[in-house]
Length: 141
Image (tube, rainbow, N blue to C red; front, side, top):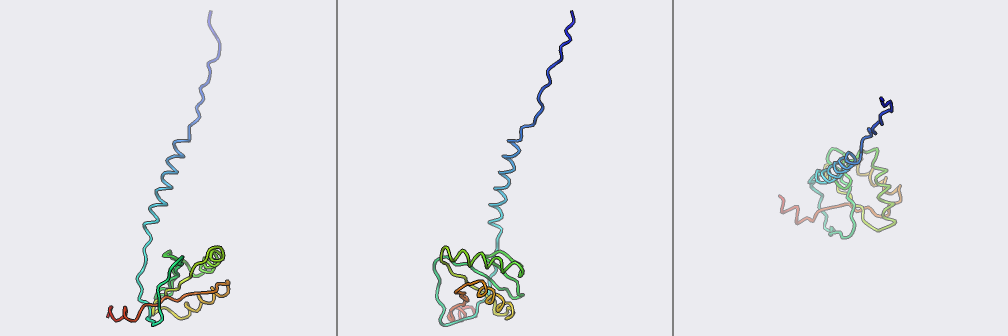
């Protein structure tokens, strides 16, 4: 006699676990690689006789010659600088630190005043302006 029973269908689901493992490994790779891609700029700071070295947690805001900003070595647009400074000032209330402004001597004064004004409006108590030692300036020349 002929058997007319139906064949069982095989489950054809894909196992996404290996795919997710590869995605997470790539994500970790790109995060680590981007940390090494950050580059800083060397700027000539104005000299001051009262300059001294800082210790502890220091957050650096750089003002470049063209008026652009870097916050801890990361380029930031002027429109977003307020939000970044707000986060920094809030973090200083939890754990004390120092906000240091490093401005190129040829940077526009308007941009310097903008940064100082933003820090004051956000409740930042101290904004340090980075300078170099006059003896260091003489050695460079």
